[in-house]
Each structure stands twice: as structure tokens, then as C-alpha cells.
Length: 65
Image (tube, rainbow, N blue to C red):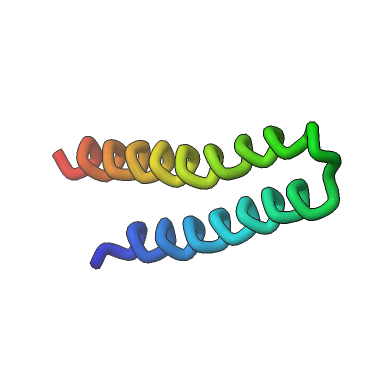
């Protein structure tokens, strides 16, 4: 596995854990109306690593040529 993929995987795990803790905190301590705000960290937990992976993949793909 390429080094950049290992670092991406490490960063993704940390990112997902932080986002999950943020969503859990919103659900645990927020009002009932604020429960919908917990969706944003969960969406970011999936979207940001996917975008970063795509950008890194494209960078290394173009750099290799």
C-alpha cells in the first residue's frame, strides 16, 4: 500500500472518530429540536475523506505521468 494511502487511512479514522463524537455530543446534550444538527458532522465524516482521497489519487495519477 502506498504511503499516502496509509496516511489517508490514519487521517480518515481520526476524522470519523472526531465527527462521531461531535454528533454524539449534539445528541446527548442538545435539545430535541437540535437533533437534526447531528446530521452535518455525520455527512462530513463521509464526504471529507472521500474528497481528500479523490484529490490525492488525482494528484499522484497526474504526477506519475
